[in-house]
Length: 309
Image 1 (cartoon, rainbow, N blue to C red):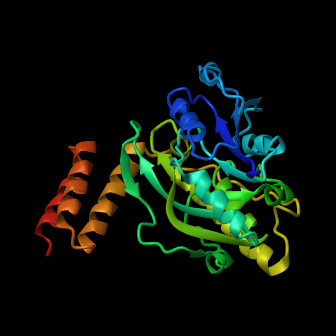
Image 2 (image 1 turned 135 degrees about the vertical axis):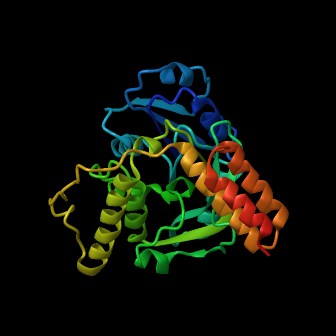
């Protein structure tokens, strides 16, 4: 009997992308799974869209509208699987993702989790950038001891009993809950990084990431990493002890998804330049120009890429 895998999908006003996200789960080569979708008080056609699928592996739960941490935890409370993954309602799993990870976890039972590489896609689902391109497969114990997180939580497959033991996400984290979760998982055992792409992360203006400012994300990430190091040193952290950190009220405004995409493409162009692949460096630079034809920075980047030896 193959292990049951629970995929948790928080969804709020996700009608534009949730069909492709659901299909990326249901069409996995690994079929022994359940897809738990938490409708977090959507006001669009998210629920009606989900109900167009006739697949007994789908479970729909009504969330409380209190954020992604609580939505994930609701899904976790109803999860029956041996292993748990998360897929946001605008992102995608590659076809062999679950099969590859289950096989590895079943063969390496001393690990609590496996994760891997991820890529970004645009609103239309077109590939943008592959992250961790030159990574090697390895255990991440040393990085986690230094509060380093190298990948997206969407790439993780985690033993369900470990997630339930740590009570899932912490509601304090309205963002960067994934960073806090990764770090707390690492405190329960070894996490392995496999150098394969396990997640396609969609960049668009209506995603949770782009409804929150960079400074807000940075604040919560800083808390997550500091508290992880505190737990490693003394066994607890202020949040566990009931002390809620003071939250700033001067966060900057969110940046557009185009801004992030352009930065990704510019960085990618220099990756290919350093690899002595001038053609790919120029093609990637041109992609950035197509995204922002009136942005002087992307034109300057292309000029430097073309002229630099």
